[in-house]
Structure formats: structure tokens, C-alpha cells
Length: 245
Image (cartoon, rainbow, N blue to C red):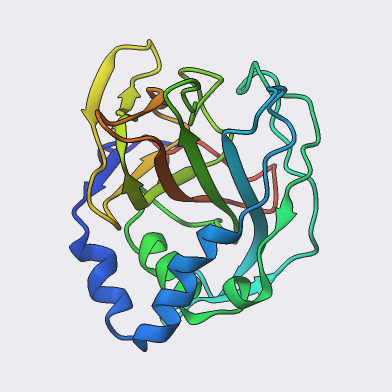
């Protein structure tokens, strides 16, 4: 099949993209969504004496993703999160069990709105995509212990597209997002600072990493809250070449 010119492998969106979408919802629904990051249990897979990352995870079928109407989210049974060692040299090959998303988040209008909006702004074709994984993550840092958003370093996640949405950045120094081509040459760097600022990347065409989180000068604790959404097909045999029509 003949290749066609592809879109750039990532997009970096100002907060207005998701702010405008969420403005259609009642303020209480949005606040319940953002406040839910205060109820994330510790990630038990870090292997550190004190936890610095807190996390929940859920999976959804994207109903109607290829149609003209709105996309609905159908929760899938809770399951461990797995990445191959070829894409995650720290935690790859391990079925990591994270706490499920709270029901109010999984069934709430805010998550549905955010996922629909991100799906409409993927940096490439979305044919075949019918599933997403949703990660709520908080990384904390103190003067005695920095936090690591990406302990695996420069990596891929093993999906088609990955959206990275900042929810909160309080008392934080560092946490610079960096994107690389497949030869590990830096192609983009940015520090997400405004709530709902977003990077959406093609995980097959770029690598990514995040520098450590440290407390800002004078802060006793730094907190960085992120929403990550992975988009992929449920059929692993689907053609994953983003350069094909």
C-alpha cells in the first residue's frame, strides 16, 4: 500500500482546548473530577521506601468512535496494566495492579468530555481505535526526595496515541516534558504549567520522557497531577503503521 504524508507526530495544546469543552458542563461536575486527584492511593510498584507516585487506572471501549455522533465510554472490566519490556525497561513484563477509577469519575461527564475532545485532536488517523486507558497520576516531591514522573527514562508506552493533560502543578520545580524522534534526537521540550495544558503524541513515532519533580524554592512539598489517556485498537493485529492511509 502506498504511503502518504503523515501529520506531525505530536500536538501541544493551550488550556483553551479542554477549558472550552468542559465549560459546557456544570461547574460541580468539573470540580468533582479535578478534586478526585486528592483520593489516589499510592503506587505499590515503585520499590521505594516512601511513595512518591499515587495512581488510579481504568479502561474503556470507545463506542461510536468512527461515526459522526458523540463517542460514548463503556467501562471494561478492571484489569492489570501491562507493558512489554521492549517499551518499559523498569516495569515492563509485569502485570501492575492499580486501584480502579472511582465510579464518580469513570461514569462522570467530565472524563467523557475530555476523552471525546482528545480523540478529536489526535495527531494522525484514528481508524481502528476503539479502546482507551485512563490513568490518574499524582507525583509528589519533598526537599529530601524528588519525584519521578517517568522512572523508565526516555521511552514509548506501547500504544497508538498518548495524551498528557496537566491538572495541577503546585510548588513544583522541574517536570519538563521532552519528546524525541525514534533516534532519540530531541524534537520538543516544554514545561506544562497551566491546568489543562495538553500534549498529544503518536506513540509509534516519538519517544518521550519527563524530568524529575522537585519542590520549588521555598516550598516544602511539590505536587504534580496528570491525566494520561492511551488510545489503541482492541485488535492487536490491526495495521499500526501511521504512515498508511
